[in-house]
Structure formats: C-alpha cells, structure tokens
Image 1: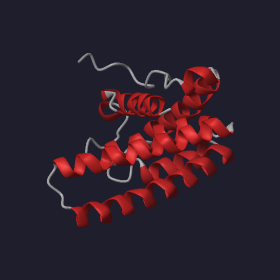
Image 2: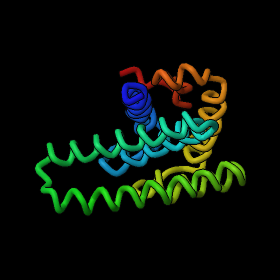
Image 3: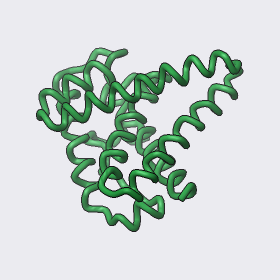
Image 4: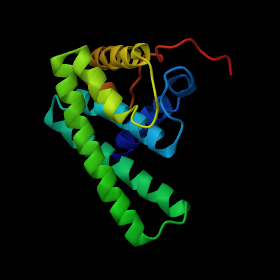
Length: 171
C-alpha cells in the first residue's frame, strides 16, 4: 500500500505544480503558496479516501509520505533537526486547520469555501473575487471528478484531477 500512497501523493503534488494556478490563478509562487496548494489537493484526495476503512488507512499513509517528503526537502535545504521538528509541527497544525476550514467551506457553500481559500491559499497575495471563485469552483469540480474514480484505482495509487480552471499560458 506504500506504493499506492506514494503514487497518490506524487499525483497531487504534480497537479499542485501546474503553472496555471500560479500564473492565472493568483496563488503565490513561494514555498508557502506551493505548500498551501498541495494542502488543497491533499484535502481533495483525503476527502475521497475517507469512504472506507482500507481507504482511511491509505489516507494515513499518504499523509505520512507527504510529511516525510517535506522533512526531506527541509533537510536538503540545510535545516537542522530542531528546526525541522518545529516547522513540521507548524505545518501539521496548518494542515489540520485548513482541512477543517475547507471541509466546513465545502459543506456550507462556495462563498464560505472561497473565504477559507482566501484566508489560507491566498494569504500571501492579493487576488480578485474572480480568482477566488475560480478556485472554489475548481475544488468542487475536483471533488466531483474524484468521486467518479474507481476505489480499486485509488487503492493502486492512481488518481486524476480536472484541468486547472484557467487558460493554458502557452509555456
């Protein structure tokens, strides 16, 4: 199942790295902005995986892979063990807070989800209402898209996302 977790994590990171989210969508192209966009996609995947006990176990493994990868990235940047522990703790708290906010937002509607995205994903940048709305619509579209994917594919680590909701930049 570890290979499946790695596959799901790799897919969500690949999706979060799509340049349209940064160039047209207004997500800050910074460590924090990239982290927050990864968390949005992790939320979408974890929301889908909480439908069965086996998938919940896979969700935990994806979470573990995600934070192990972040730990490794910080080590490669030369951050020491004490600094890594503090940052991982802060990132874990950020993750949990965002998951709650996004779940509440999805349940309450596009306006509430947009407010949560604006507070978290767009915290480091100034974006238009249209950009917030586009991201909210994308989150709902991605949730719907993942709901159509077979459980067996997810358990093999296979997941797809809809295209970012922006015109390709041509790069």
